[in-house]
Amino acid sequence: MSAVRRKFGDEYQAVGPARCSARRERQRFVDKNGRCNVQHGNLGGESSRYLSDLFTTLVDLKWRWNLLIFLLTYTVAWLVMASMWWGIAYLRGDLHQAHDDTYSPCVANVYNFPSAFLFFIETEATIGYGHRYITERCPEGIVLFLFQSLLGSVVDAFLIGCMFIKMSQPKKRAETLMFSRAAVISQRDGRLCLMFRVGNLRNSHMVSAQIRCKLIKICYL
Image (cartoon, rainbow, N blue to C red):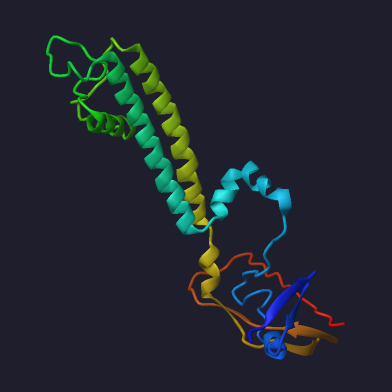
């Protein structure tokens, strides 16, 4: 039978025949690469605090969730804004008179939703092929254009800044730092000291490096 673990405070107790083996296979509190295995639980209503600091929450997410949020945010924003441009053309009747040379539409050469989507992409990415453009007889289009520019700048600054900060974090730097497999207790300067070795695999020098150690003492009652 597999061991059944029950949590009592900060300790774990194994119930069943595999109690002894479960105690030997207990996971480390801190891995050798410095990652802490302690996870927060039973937060109750405190989980909403993560939304108050949304930027830091996005930075701390895993890469797969960051990329998913990045793609979904841009995809939804593009579809919504393209729908608004298509809605303006539809309400003004531009879609039915798009091929009339004597008619002045809100956005030239917008015939359907794909053309409205292409116009939005050209405007947002500042491509400007020159085939589709806003005319001066469309005040609602000018207002939507200003709103699109402001919203695009905010979304770009938020998401691109989040991705840049996440890429600049040296979380994988510990992969090239080697620790000795065993620590020793020896007398140094008249005192017993716990000693271990740290090695850097890279040729670059580490300036003002600091090492913090955690000593975890478990007492069994």
